[in-house]
Amino acid sequence: MQAHYKKAFTHPLYFIAFGFGSGLSPKMPGTVGTIAAIPIYIILAGFHPWIYAGIVVASLVLGVLACDWVARDMADKDPAAIVWDEFVGLWIALFMLPDGWHWLLAGFLLFRFFDILKPWPVSFLDRELQGGLGIMMDDVAAGLYSLLVLQLTAYLMRVML
Image 1 (cartoon, helix red, strand yellow):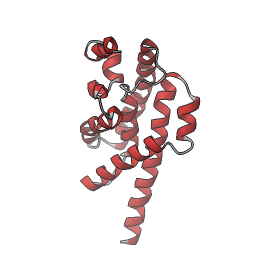
Image 2 (cartoon, helix red, strand yellow):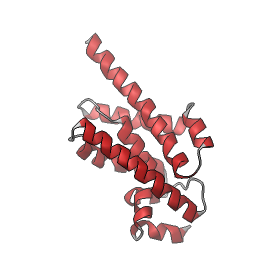
Image 3 (cartoon, one colour):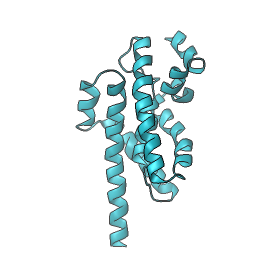
Image 4 (cartoon, helix red, strand yellow):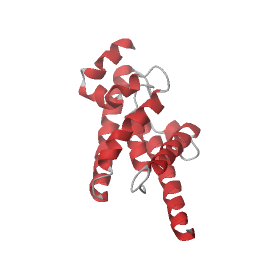
């Protein structure tokens, strides 16, 4: 396993799949990977929503390919060090997020909640899909759940206040 971790900073697919090295955290690599995605989100949030969405879709496709290759190279279905799925899942959750640090915190917490709890269909996708697609799609679903809750909450707050 350690031999694979050394590739995190020498092999581009490992670098991506390991979330620029954040997946190498010995404790809670998924949470650390999600935190590492926040500075990139802050940059993405400044773009037009179509550009943001395009970057997220491209990151998803790249993630399916990179995560599939790295998981096969490591001979592991879903290595804990692969956290690119957390990056993309969080970016989906935070799409068109209202301004304010409290929204960012809520998005982070909701995404981690859905990613860890894995309500259906997140659990189904995690269990049934294989390879890079399986690694990525459960986090995409967790991101979509989070996005729905955040946007519904923001809408209800606008209507009620």
